Length: 156
Image (cartoon, rainbow, N blue to C red):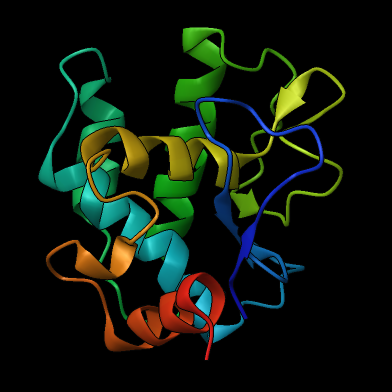
């Protein structure tokens, strides 16, 4: 299940972010429903407000994703496009392009790369800074993610 993470050495610009529990995307991946929904929802948020500096390939891949909770080729393609975009923009020269969103462990980065889930969070946050981390208030947020926000941000 997806969860909110506050890394030990938090970045002032992203003190908390939503993390996946298991790998989402290409095999071998576990693809837990809530984790997949989080990744897919991030792409729908990104697609709703494309950045002019993003490539047409990335914008098209993000726009093709639907938040269903089931892994599909459109989601895998968008993950790979996001990873390629990060590498091109210099946000993680060591970012691995494998079509997988792995749980961020030990912080925001691994070696010379940055976790894909961190970039997806930064993209959502940048588009909705006034309500971050209340992604449940973003239009179109799936009910299952709304419940996750209540569980992990507000507490139950």
